[in-house]
Image (cartoon, rainbow, N blue to C red; front, side, top):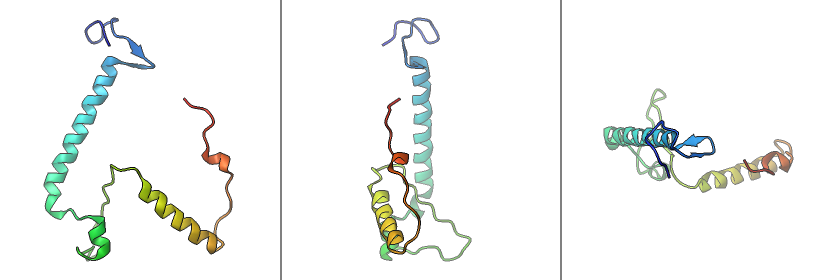
Length: 111
């Protein structure tokens, strides 16, 4: 919702963002997506799925100088929660660590 050209006083301000600022953010996001797509195409023949690596269907690193990159920029993060649970249970069983107050991980106010 705007009523004037960019940089005019006709733009409504939502919070601290003007329509013009939001437009610039969206342009940068599009540029980032283009770059990711370009990288995907460049390395398409070298991309392997983590499930295939773990199952032994594709080879892992063959020497220490090789680099493995996990590109995880999508999803809900449930796998991280699942792994964290296993790590927590094993650490607890081993007597490692110490209890942390739950308040450290709670948000009582919303911005």
